[in-house]
Figure (tube, helix red, strand yellow):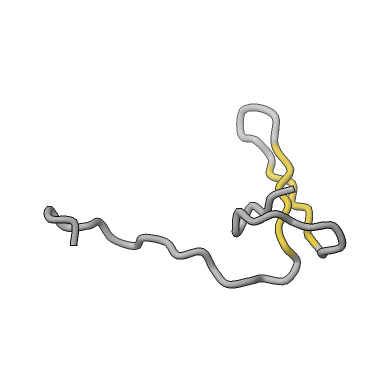
Length: 53
């Protein structure tokens, strides 16, 4: 399984939480996340400038 929060594998023996994600107009899905939160994945919070700064 892959963690929906950090995109890393959930290894055998690691604790995880199962989260049901209902679909608005179709079938929902089930997400799995690590029970213990690790280091957050870096996210871009603003657009790069015209010169890619």
